[in-house]
Amino acid sequence: MVPSEVFAALADPTRLEVLTRLASGGPATATELSASMPITRQAVAKHLVALDAAGLVERHPAGREVRYTFDPGPLGDLVKWVENVGDTWDRRLERLGRTFG
Amino acid sequence: MVPSEVFAALADPTRLEVLTRLASGGPATATELSASMPITRQAVAKHLVALDAAGLVERHPAGREVRYTFDPGPLGDLVKWVENVGDTWDRRLERLGRTFG
DNA sequence: CTTTCACGCAACTGGTCGGTTGCACATAAC
DNA sequence: GTTATGTGCAACCGACCAGTTGCGTGAAAG
Image 1: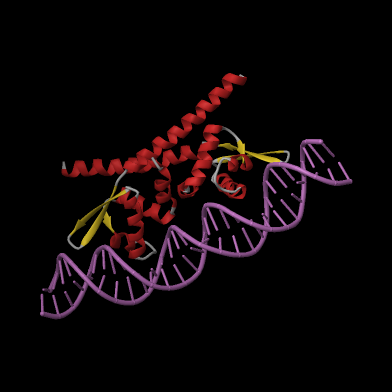
Image 2 (image 1 turned 180 degrees about the vertical axis):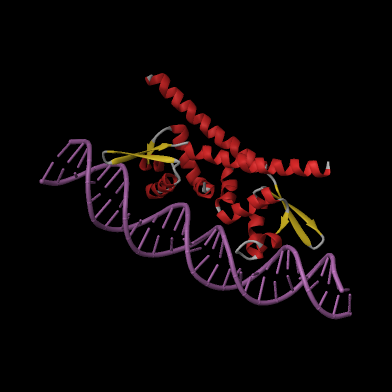
């Protein structure tokens, strides 16, 4: 897996805000989201493209509007990666403890 | 907490590589790390500054060299944030299930 | 004391990114 | 059919970022 892509998708505060709004406030369109945010609809749309590319969001076209849904999948992969790094770190510490303890 | 800073620190593949090397290979200096990487020592040093600012790494100056250590702390905060988002999402789904189920 | 080596700082460059404006297109409403 | 509304696409701009080179400094080695 290449977690840096997901990390990059979550790195921008505005994009993180968009994602949390979808997660806590439910599905919404770019226009709806931009209405209560200090940026343009196109800016929100770009963020949604990035989130969609990272798999954190699902597109649901309906008529002339596109509704977006939060997808927690990649976040699970992220946690797995973090836990893996933590485990190798713990094993390092344990190995050092066995050598010098 | 502002997790976007930690996410930003992990967003770059090279910086992620530096961090995982410290986590799995143990403490090292910028010069040592750059020796087995396709970039300059200064580039590695910049990444270490960024990782230090995010709290993911500890500086240990010793004589004329500076040895860096992996610090898993912020990763724990990250997991907590992810689990929090996941929980609000689950509560949303459960609330919808109670309304329409 | 002289030399060597590790580091930090500063300047520069190419590329990417977040955001904007403007426009064209398609769908819905009247 | 005409008007209004929601999207997408393209161009542009300023800022930031990863990486480089060059130089100065300070500690260790000889």
